[in-house]
Length: 187
Length: 421
Image (cartoon, rainbow over all chains, first blue to last red; front, side, top):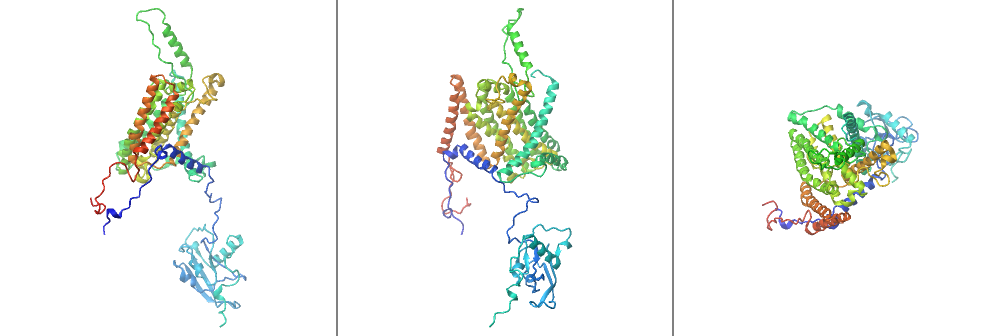
């Protein structure tokens, strides 16, 4: 159905009074605002000298968490690799070494292509044992594509670095594995 | 130094041009800093302390960039336009006082009949006056020019040639649109610009800026207190003449890419930008001289400064006072840029033709009446305020608003689809 004149509602701006028609008071009013802002505290962060304060849920470089014994928490379940929309996680699973009583598998290799990653945080959400987390490291640079492919050791070193620096405390239950590793409730 | 001394003049021109060019470089930094502060940012601060070396880097960039002359331009005028813009901007400074000035003595006519051999006392007096005048110094490139203000306006309106040639020769529709807007705008605003100044000229009885300054100092009152309305009109016209916001339609980035200098690059772009800032400096000096008493500042500078501070002290103090006034205007230019949004083109024209020109005319009539009947000058202040308020009230009575204009609008008959007619 075509639009008719009756369908149109005319919204009218308020008529200018003497204050508006004289222009000058309004301009003086505006100048007060601009000059006021000139002497306000500035919001600029001087980046290289002044690091930004990031929220703890910032999604930066990944890390692989360690448990209380220093082993990787990952159980090589492939949940993160499955959830990843960018297909940047590559895991090769292997049977857990002797003496690792709490799991059957562990990741022999765990590679994330940081260039392909879109930093959506789906891996973190998918992980049943809270082994993978995104840190607040944001200034990730490299000289080649190969450098930006992070293997297990690199990801564990990110964990060591960020926990030592105190920037990213382990958000989940430190040490213990996540709820998925617990035995099913007795029936 | 009103007597022509070419060495003095050459040195003075060199110093003045150098000072203006460097001031322009720092004005660009100031513009960026003020823009940043108004937006709660810090502005350029990486080159040198507080970014103070930024102008050098900016200038170096202009020199080092590739100078592109597109194939589709009219080469002659394309190359000529920046020179015209820059040249006229520099020429206009010639009569603008930048420091201490001495007004030229008023003309004295000898009443001597031809063939009379007796010594002419009037001529002797005239020569004595001229001699004392020639011994004093004035910080004007061309001192004692009796058509000073007229000259500034004449050269100032030539500046539009730079803009028009730049836009037309670029063979680019956006550049052409920008220069067309500019020509219409400058022609419209030249009228209130010239008319608002006529009252001041009438009061001083001279078009010479030095004489106008001296008149304000002798009267111990700046012209702005007598003629606030004329000053307001002049200021507004100057904003339009300098293409500053809210009148920057010739280079409205959102609509016209870069406006008339879209096709320019490297040093030629630099010259066009420089001309704009030089224009701002000239007009700010002119406003200080015509309305704010030039180098006069009550409590600091008076007529007998020469005896008080000596020639060098006087020169320094007077130049400092005038420069301070000039920079106040420039700061106003820059803050207003971030305060008022750009006018629409019809609003721009309506403001010039329907508001400013009638007001300037009425203001002029008031000055004429007051001078003719010898009324006290404060009545001019009253007349200005009355005119201003009356214009506001008139606007309230007659004006509609944007969505409900008072002019006749053809309404569609009901039932017809919108856009059918």
